[in-house]
Structures are given as C-alpha cells and as structure tokens.
Image (tube, rainbow, N blue to C red):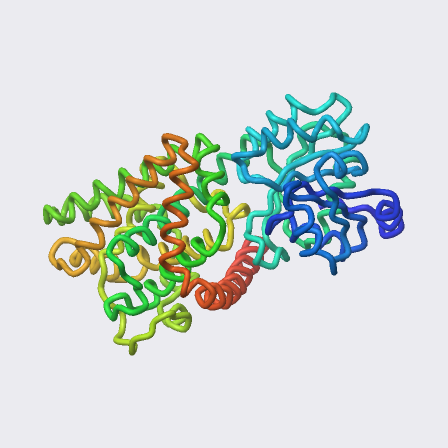
Length: 448
C-alpha cells in the first residue's frame, strides 16, 4: 500500500473534493468515513429524493446536493455507488459534467461493464480508478479486502486514491477489471446462490427453521445466520453480481446442475456413486487436517436463532454444502487461490464446508442420511427447485423477477431479520478473529 506522507495528506484534504453519486448503504458508509477522516465530501442520491436525503444526513459532515451534475462539477474524485443494473445509464448522464482532469470510479461488484461505460461516456481527460470493498455496509472495513483497479491514470493519481482509501484501514488488493470479475464470481456467486436457494426452500415449505427441532446444531446455525444475513440486504446487491457478470452465470448454472445431480444420486440410493463424486470434491481440502479447521460445532452452537430447546446436532444430507464443493471441482475452481479477495460470508461458508468435508465421519454420515433417511428429502427437493429457479432468473437476466422473488422471501423472514443480523454480526466478529489468527500462523510458518 502506498500512502503519501502526513503533510502531503493534509494538503490533499484541503485541496481535493470527493464526490459520491448514490447515497445508499455503501455510498453513505464511504461518505461518512471519508468526511470523518477530514476530507471534503459532497454526495447525492436520486434527484426526486433530494429533500428526504438531505434531511436524513443533516447531522453528518458531508454535503448533500441535488444531483450528480452538482457532484461531478466540483469533485476531484467521483465514486459512482449505484446499482449495477443502472450504472451505464447513470454514468452516461453525469460523467460528461466531470471536472476537467478529475478521476472517477465505481463501487459495483462487476467491473468490466462499469469500466466500459466509463470509457464510452467520459471525456478523454478523465482518469479511471475504480474500487470495490468486498464486504457489506454494516461490516467494519478494517482489515477487509478492498480492490483498487488502476485502469487509466498516472502514479500520482493512484497515490491520491490510495491515500483517500487508507482511512478505511482495509487490505488493498490490486487487480484488473477482468481479474476482479473472475475472482468475485469464484468467491461470491455460488455462495449467494446456495443461501438464496436455502431461504427460498424454507419459504416454499413455510418453515422458520429456528422453530423446528430438526434444524439444530452448529452447521445449521451457520446456514440460518448466513441466509438471513443475505435476505436482510437489498436485492440489487446480489442481482448485480449475478446478472452482469458472465463468469457468475457459469458458476450459478453449475451449482444448480450439481445440486440436481447429487440429489438424483441420493433418491436413487446410489451410495457408491455419490461417495465417489464427493470424495473427488474432498480433494479441494486435502491440505486441511482436523486440527486446522477454522470452525467447529461447539463454536457455531453459540450463535443460534433457535427458539426450541437444543437437542444436539441433527444428521442432515447438507446438500447445499455438498453442491458447492461439487461445483468448484467441476469448474476447476480452487477457492483458496482467491482467499485475499474473500468476503466475510465467503470465509464463513468456506469454513463450514471444510468442517463438513474434513471432520472425521461427518461426510460419511451425510452420505448415509442422504441415501437412507427421508427426514430432509422434501427440503432437499425444494432446495433443488429453488436453485434451478435462481439459475433461470440469472441466465435470462431478469432483474424484475429476481427482485420479486428476493423480496417475497425477504418479507417472509422479516420478523427475524433484525435479530438474525445481530446474532450474525457477533458470529462474524468471532470467526474473523479466528481467520486473522490463522493467517498470522500461516505467515509465521512461511517465514520460518
């Protein structure tokens, strides 16, 4: 990370203005962090919401203006923090108003379409340095991955943007737009598909899993917490990544295929075929031994939404977890290759999947339950249907149906989302502390 000296930083803060177009959750988080660090920040949201947005942020240090033209004319660096679906239209509207020689960037989760729009609509004097914080707006950015893409700029411009971003105290990762999109597909697309499908399956069977004794145990707690966390966010966060990123299409389609094929083996009772396929997937975790597991059932037991007395861990086929490992092995994806760019949810999901595949006897138990115990069979069928539905929505690029389906499930779970977020935050905090300890041990072993 290159950050300018303290005196130069103070000079930059006195002379440079930072613009944020889009004061949604992430845009507002950036505006608050930058202005609290001493930068002059001006932002806007949709013009028809100007008065309400101005009132909402009246007690903050940044200025709210009417629209992106006012932001663009005065800002030395403009960050477009808008939905991926709308990024091209918004850039086309406001980029021509950019201050001469300004730098612009975006915050979408898919960078190639964003960069193409900048190239198409920005004057030639405009520099392009785009960013992506790989976490949600309610996660502390300290230590989290922050991707910086220097697409069209000189070193001084890039140093300025890095100095600005340093107040987030994130880990800077340097990629191209294409590299970014492939990595985010590898680390996020299937994760989201799994937990969107899980929530949809519970919705279809009208189940609140925390009220059902058979959904008990640490792994089930993690599934519930992550799924509820996803549905507590806004639909476009996931639709943007899934629909605009071609690499994500491949991942999500394969996830649906893996879930369907594994379920077919389960209901036919083809144990040996299922076992052979899953042992192949387990090769992804061959470097992990039982003592190196990030998570364990005892830890995850602490973060329960359950309103029923604990009855111990309930054996389950864990189709959702088996399918993601099968997806990775089918596509030749090694999840550990991109660990520097992983989101908090991905690290937890990877940890849970490691736990299933690497804990002695647990994978074998899942295979046995899947083939001989009908307890979860209806749930697994609903899960497969849900995975196919999400895959179809993404393949056809249907934002409206994606939103309708997402918000239907979100509404069903709305009574529990606030509590789930609170419990999930505590779980993430503890698990990320473990991640940090694990990373530090790995560094120490490497240097020794």
